[in-house]
Image (cartoon, rainbow, N blue to C red; front, side):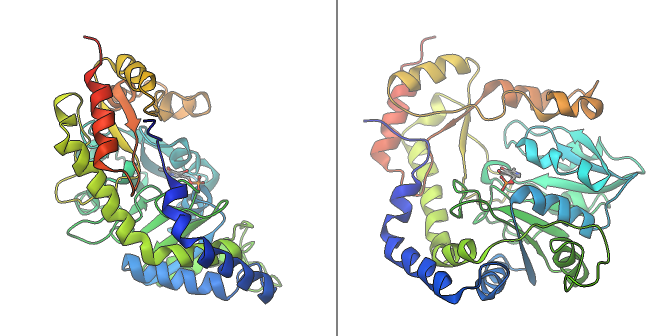
Length: 361
Ligand SMILES: Cc1ncc(COP(=O)(O)O)c(C=O)c1O
């Protein structure tokens, strides 16, 4: 039995009629950009997350650039960012004029910690981009206690929870991606900035709209970066199901644990207190190529996402040169994403575990 890495089709199958009706509604409304669907979805996702404002933008990468600028980040500033993350987390920083400063992660959780962030702080640090990687929840309060504002990169963590609140409600602001494979995915590209700070939300609204409030007078150099009505309507159908899907992702992790996967590989560890809606379920193994081969031979899909950490990617060399991040190197060398979806069954988990058991020693 082949086990896919994701299973978006089964998750959306029961919603197809509702999704078609939502698409028709937009078609008939003849409003396609920044209309009532975007307004409503911004309010609904902000309420779900537990913040005051949502600002829809074109994708999760723009969301980071715009949120940083709305937080006052600009030329001469530094933004601390983990190197073990999707490239876009760091790529979004230089367009603000600021410099990325790479910090390490804890290879057990794949997230930044207060200690790894502290090691990267300088008097020029203006913000920390805390990435909730793979759906885990980085310790935002501990980082804020260092005296720096935190922007949460919650692209992979919609639906994840913690004692202090949901991922996306913990820092000064947060950013989300609706890339189709994400926990809440649209049918194209989309993103959102979340914040309870009225001024940041207002700045983000201006920046996404060419730096203008009305496309008549222009206050700053901005972007054309908007969420469209179709995508918002599609996600409004999905949002009421997000908690059930997040529970399904937690159940899938439990299936892996109960099937004995932890005896064979290092399982991802939730950050203390966190309840992750695992976006990717990422195991670690000292001989990861052997694990990859064994899973592949059994028809179990798997993928190494970030084998080369961001600070060693060629366009980042000017900021990554000489930076030593042992936790990042360990995570990069040993990680492997295995199947994860809200629909993953115990039988599928057993299949994955049986394949992992066949790894040659
Ligand atoms: C951690 C992280 N940050 C940022 C992004 C950028 O989002 P997008 O692809 O919507 O630009 C992604 C996803 O693609 C991501 O996984």
